[in-house]
Each structure stands twice: as structure tokens, then as C-alpha cells.
Image 1 (cartoon, rainbow, N blue to C red):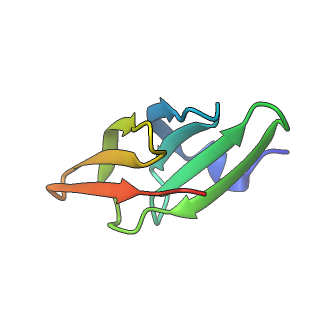
Image 2: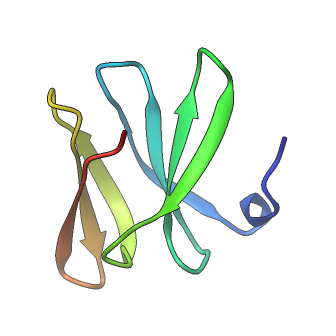
Image 3: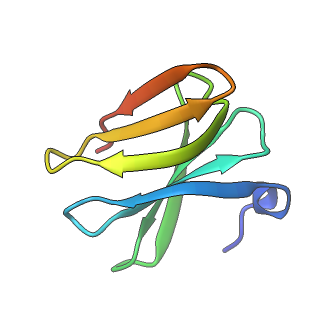
Length: 83
């Protein structure tokens, strides 16, 4: 199933958490979002980036499951703790 926003989104910054979930930033849509892909169930979900995100060019997953997002253009680092 494709999201309507995918046609105009610009996936950027990608990380994989220890549980195998793939995360990436979806720039080019308002608001910027954090997309979760579960390869086991082949399902996608998305959530807004709390800081707005600017353009998330880099993302790092910690072993605790947090995501650090480098938000260009807004001079912020977002820290997300997805479930």
C-alpha cells in the first residue's frame, strides 16, 4: 500500500534499530515525518518529527533504541525514542 505523500516525499537519513526496524526521514512533505518500516510484516507507519526536522540528512540508532536526527536548516538535533 502506497502513501499519497510518497509521490512528493524525499526519503533521507536512514537507520536500523537493533530489532531490525528500518527508520528514515521523509522530507519534502509538511510536516516532516519519521517513517518506520518493519521488514517482517512488510508494513509502514509514520509519525511527525517533533522538532519539525528541517532536512534530516543523517540519522543514528543507539543500542537503547533511540534515534538521533541531524536537522539541517533548523540547527537542531532531534532525539526520538520510537516504540
